[in-house]
Structure formats: C-alpha cells, structure tokens
Image (tube, rainbow, N blue to C red; front, side, top):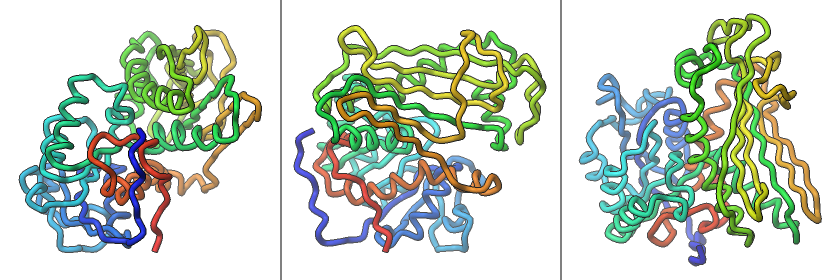
Length: 357
C-alpha cells in the first residue's frame, strides 16, 4: 500500500502469454486475442493433446500462428510483459521463475490477494522474485475480487461509520452441465455426512484475505477470521443439467466467512450454492435462495443494499459466466505492468477500467 499509482497517459502494447486454457483460461485467451492493447505471443497448456495446437483454435476461433507449449522455458524465452496465470492449482516455484525472468503476472489464483495474509515464507520468496525480476504479481477475479473488494470499497466511500458489511453470493448450479465439478468436486448429490472441513478451509483461505484487506484499508483491521457452514438435502428427486440429485442427498450448501473485530462480526461473506431451493437444512433455518449474483448489505451512517444479477437468457448463461472471472485480469494487465515491483493488491492499483478500443 502507499505506492504511487502508475501513469498510463501514453497507451502502449503488452506482450502476454495465456497460462492454462480451461473454461476461464480459454475465454481469457479469446478476449486477449481480441484486445486492442494485448499481443498474445504464447500459450501454456497442461494436456499433451493441446501441445502444438494453435492459440486461436484453443480459443474457439481461427488460427493466429501462435503454437501452445507445456514448457516454462519456452514461455520465458518469449519475454512476455505479462503472464495471465490461470491454472487449477498454484505452483510457487514456477510463479517465482516467471517473476524472476522479468514477466509480470496477473492471476485468478487467490493466494496473492493480500500480502499480509500470506504465509510469511511464501510471501518473502515471491517478493524476492519480484525484486530480482523488477516485476509484480496481482490476484483478481469476480469473487474473490470484484464482489469482495472493488464493490465494498466503492460503497464504503459514502460512509463515515461502518457497523457491518455482508457480502452474499448466490449460485444456482442447476443449469450447469458439469457433472464432475458438481458431483465429484463440490459434492452435490452425495448423502449428507461428507466432511465439510476442506470446503470451509478453502473458502476461509480464499475470502478471508479479501475481508482483511478491505477492513484494514478503511481503518478497521480484523482480529481474526472465522468460518462456518451447512448443507441442505433435497426433499425430492431433482433433475438438473448435470444429472439426477436424488431425494435425501445434498442439493444446497452454505458457507459463512466472518471477519471479527471487537468480538463480533464486522464483515462477512456468505456463499449459498445450490441446485434446488426445495431442501431441508441441517441447521433448521430457512435459507435465502436468490437467483445467481450478489447482494451487498452495508449498515452504517449511509445504509446501502445493492443487488447484482445477470439479465441473460438461460440458454446464454453458460456462455456468459466464464467472462465474470476472465475479463478482470485482462483489464488489469496494463496497470500491473506499470506498477512498482512486488505483490500488488487491489488497493495498490488504480481503479481497473477496460480499454475497449
């Protein structure tokens, strides 16, 4: 915090490499190829079948003359200004290697959202790599990111007192045709009793740093972050796009990440993910099921209640959602490339605005 904002008076072009081409990565690649200030010079892939394929084909458009690789040495040799790092899991060693080579990194991984929340050893190694490469790294996305940092900070600009901020995320997954993700990874359709600790820990680690960052930025640092959660089981069989969720199995899950100050919750993030609202909850309470989106409720001297949904047709929903996470990193590239070396949080950078032409 406290670093001067980069000056972007003279637009320039930035050489970028797209790292990973999953659902979000492929969308980022396509939009990067279309971007007026970005030149895609390389693509890093994980599947052997993708090695050597043209970046345009991987993005769902025509060939562009850029071949995909699975070697970090090839990426570094391209000397990109920025790597759009979007793998399923973070590899600290390769992140350090990219930064040491002089490439800036914009990532959808959550490990770098808030330097002060990082493991001290990891933070020291990443910052040392930034110093050696005169580079910077920034984590961002829609959630955490847009909904948990950008929006709360804008809303807080109207306040002189904050009593509580609640960030509520709703995700109706009934139209998502991803059986492996919904059933095997998330646990929908399973009998109740599956340990929840892994999910609770994951969301604490993903969203806790955002709450801590926002709270400290407005001068109300948190004492600790707590997490709790529950499930709802389907009252009857539910047929969704990904398959059948039998009655008596998990059809909804809720996780609450709370930032504690003065012995009570000051800020909270609640994720309610579901495939059906017709459930029996394990806490006996009636949960708030809304259409996919966010609701932010800020209690202070200027109370605010802001809801965001996606006005798209059901048949267009699956095509729209990758952009929620993919677009913010692209729009952040020019700011990160011009920023001082180091781990740059959302409060270190200017407000991220798109360059559309």
